[in-house]
Image 1 (cartoon, one colour):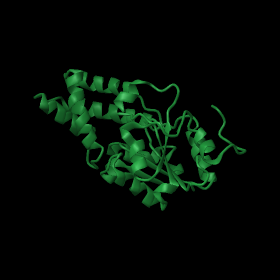
Image 2: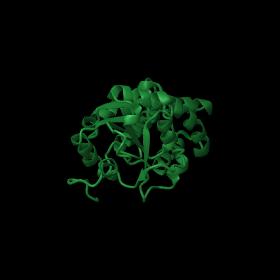
Image 3: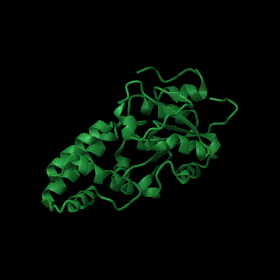
Image 4: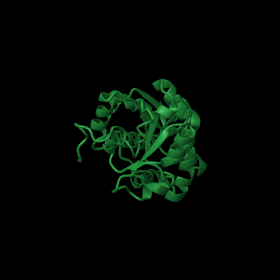
Length: 242
């Protein structure tokens, strides 16, 4: 990074950045839901995707409500026990996602030791916000901005400004670290932050289209631990290869 630019904070994306996320795994779960409801998967997905985007800015959304809404569109009335079972399956899936990637905890701890403030911005439904306090990541981030809490989704500029205000930093003194889904890197740049893309070498190519990833030609790294090197240079105690 340009050493002449002060860095006071890093704002992280969650899915695909601090934790793993694979669109193919999500689609397998949604296919199970569609099959349980008796709806062809492609038709189910056509109804799921736009409704889920709304869910990401709703504090009152539940997956059960969304499944009932989709079923109603096909004039179906599934057994309440089936809806409850699918809701539990969804929440197990979400809890499983909140497991940090390799290097994530070490990297966050190192950045905190180096004096940086750390924030989070995530497009997600409210159940992730509810589960968050039980994640190993929660104690390591100073502020969080969940889209369902803010009623704002990345790349809305106000979401980045929200994070910077809560961190008490100027946007140009903050980095944004993300995999590039939802056009989040160009959104961060427009809000005045300095974006860095995390693009793992073994990333699932299905994620590019499924997460609406942008083509990014700015700074990028392939391992989260390299963020420390990018900011501070090669200093003792760097995060090792894992």
